[in-house]
Length: 437
Image (cartoon, rainbow, N blue to C red):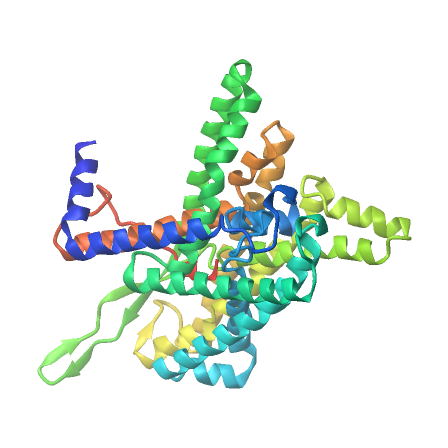
């Protein structure tokens, strides 16, 4: 405990770090205040709780309940995330975007500008659907074209303001700003879910509630292990004589993450699981369509979770294949006179890395699928649905990843000032793909 308070004192004794922490807290406070401001012309008393399972429940969780409140931040940062995913996929498929990615700082600025423009377009389309489908007609005081236009403009402005807050947190605060906004939205739902779980269980089921908390603790530890797990491939560099000095000869490692795809497979799979409900609405006369829509729209049915798990397995391999390129790694090693001991440079090295990546991705994808369906199992054994969502899925993976990344940045500040790190042994290792959450 003494070491903990000493670490806190060291953190706030570094002026730059202290200022960044306060900047982050202030910007997050502004974001949370904005999430409670209702769109002009909407009567909040007439709003119904539209939260449910599937994609809508996920969206409402990620934006901290703003979706249900018809807030000016109702769409939150999610359109920006969607635009970023599209641009990221285009950099693997379209030569123009590949060229921009290789142009260094100027190329990154162009990609950022394109992402912002695409964010506006995505937000416009999503705002139309949100206004017409998720705001009850009786909650709108003066429905009409003026309300539609003004609400669309406000929702677009709200999303762009959220994006600005996220960028400011990244520049002037601590941690990745976009991921931080998503995490604070998820965490904001936790106290209410915890209070609801306590009141529902009561004193008679207090033992069961304690077991729930212990189970949640072990689930979080398992997710931390999944996030941090790596397979280190040893790499040696040939010695070179440059002038009178010898360079190279040391051994390093290529860390391949067991879960290198992060939360992207869950997000892609969750989006596809929204399709059966749409199909059922389009062919409502068909009994088969109604059965499929009802069955696969219920996030607690075994059919839903089986299909969900299979999709996560497939998307994990897909996203790992497009995000980790063994050929590029092998070429970089060959260019820098590096080699894997016992493996020839070039194509044999690429095949070896691809083989290792495939072997570690399989258990990683299975574990990721288990984490994704844990909320359903938690609900089956008696955990409340609001509290069960923190037992796994996208919410838990994002929270763990963002917290680890933020702790890594804080530890780097401490080590730069020659203070002791936050851990007695080892270092806090963050994720490389938190921003893709």
